[in-house]
Length: 253
Picture 1 (tube, one colour):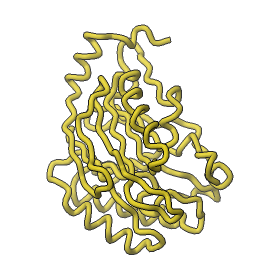
Picture 2: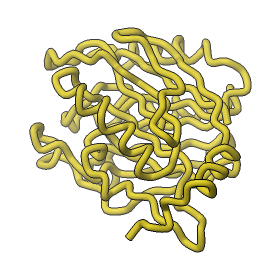
Picture 3: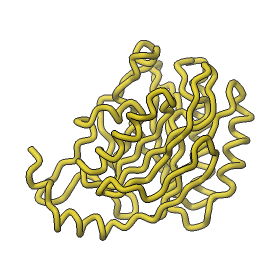
């Protein structure tokens, strides 16, 4: 499966400009890409301003438009209102425009996120082109038990763990250390997309978007402070061979 990660900046306080900017960036997507992954709250940057919740509708329409035009799945999170509650909602749009979502479980307590948004309660594992994919969002990375893979009769819950994030530079060391740990402990590929640039509060983001193999090795990585698409071809047969050759999953509690 060919995946693409879009490490991008966000146009602050101008949704129309942000929409146009993303369309321009995505227009360069290579043909035959199976999955495009965007950052957390990619249209607004990380925010608890519920006045921007309408961007969830606009952003989802953008994702569907990309899925239709490029015949690819698209993943990314948006500030979203649903029945009077607000969520940091991670959408996965299939090429046929069907949608599943995951609501961020671990809301960042150093911000107003837990006071304003509603935490998700359900894990989301989906199937796409024979791959089992688990969705996660930013702060979830610090809670390994939430994404712990499990095995049932030798079949693991997921093959690819996706993180979409707005992970500030001040805590970037944790990002770089925890991501390989998640790949190794879960015997799975990890794709992690972080934004770059500076947000409306003055926090800076280098990015460090990366694709990791099931041994924690770097398969593809973005340049610091760069808006760019990076690509990686994932081989599920190699993953399954490794799991059979080194079945650590047998010893998971």
